Length: 305
Image (cartoon, rainbow, N blue to C red; front, side, top):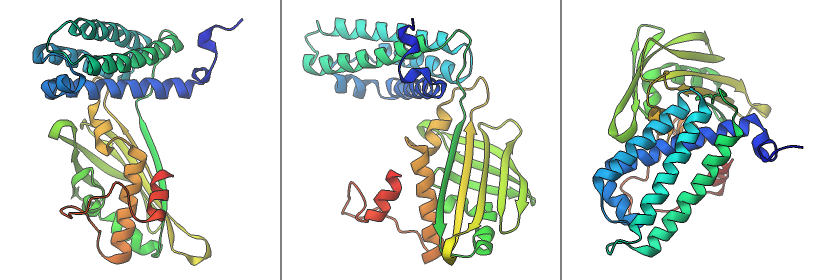
């Protein structure tokens, strides 16, 4: 007879890993909010303002998230999250008795924490002792650009131009023909830096690179150029991997691309396509008419893909 742990979608190892990774990033993100904006968080959940306590809770969240993502005994760190959830529920319960509390908001926050606790328990129970979670973000995206492969190859080969259409990058500086230094946006306004080298370079076909040395992020990537069907231009295929070095607090990876890495890479490709085909990238910064979504059905469909 199978136990509850053997049933359901958590039977699949990939699903278990994805849930654990999501909980790890959630823990780090929540911890950063508790440390950097404790008063705002307290007001949002309707609790009395206790900045010192919230910052301590934030440090605990970051430690648990970093533990999950750094490949130790994963189940133990997930169980640490469950213990932390129990503490959070206790603090929320005690806050109900304060005259300064907004009990309606506190009740909603308690329900939310209870839901996360249930996920933490499921994740912890689904892993065997010693089973670990891979921390690599592996992203693949492709897009057709109405230009010949040789032109696209030349533009991409100039790595210093990548920040023009990759928003997470601040700068890429070449050091010789094959080596470069990358600077990207990190968490809470910090910078993330690493050195990279080109390991495969086939003109008009592909460029493959990887990080070297002891930078802030272990990174590898490739871009390939393939003829599109019907002479409709070139298929640009981008593949990237990011992984924090062992032992580092891993908030860097999640914030390199924002909340949805696949969508961010697609946005980068759309900007590249726009830059190549029209000579400029349309921007909305400073425009008075902000929209929740694009007026282009095609653009929205691409983002939902």
